[in-house]
Length: 253
Image 1 (tube, rainbow, N blue to C red):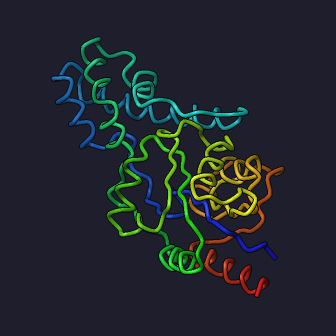
Image 2 (image 1 turned 60 degrees about the vertical axis):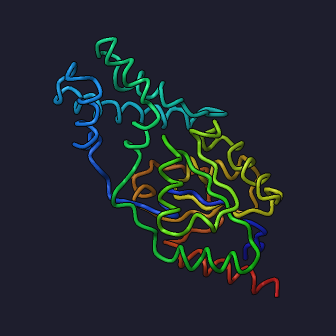
Image 3 (image 1 turned 45 degrees about the vertical axis):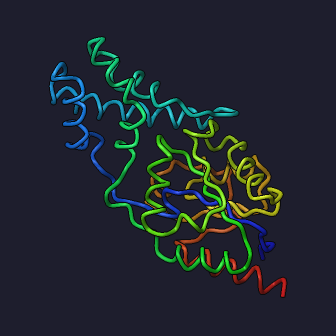
């Protein structure tokens, strides 16, 4: 039986919300880039470079996650290092000036949906007096913030920490520790809920979280094995999280 938490730290993608995979070069983003660079780079080349850039950035994220204390790249560096390296100088400069709004557009998913049971779990946690915080790796946290606001969940959270804003990337324990400090609860009394072993559960362990909960998502099933990383509990969705919270509270009562 898990010890009842005094706060919840939750990942965004795969826990609070999820979306089907989208093409790495969305047509609307290709058009936006084409207009931004004034046709200096062909649309076909933009689409190819976005696709390859997404692959290389994903590989970089995987590699960074195997280091001791990974930190996020700036928006400008992501575009310069993974997408626009071969473009003419003026085109590179134009993208650099718009790196943050472009990162927002590349992050945003029109078909994000709140995961089943999450509203109920958040309401129950709030009613029990548990402060909540988002702890997420992302290219652009502003897109996540806006989605949570749009679906009426932003008010549930005392704090939101995103890697592009805060600096550390999970499994760097600093991201979770910043969130625990922000909600005023010792990390060993926080449950950390994420959908990956290598980033979320490992990050929770490094930070000293009271419990590391693995919520299954499509990303969980695609993750390579991490036999040395074992969560304290495995759940399918927000309904499973609510059941865990009720079980933990009943053991105290």
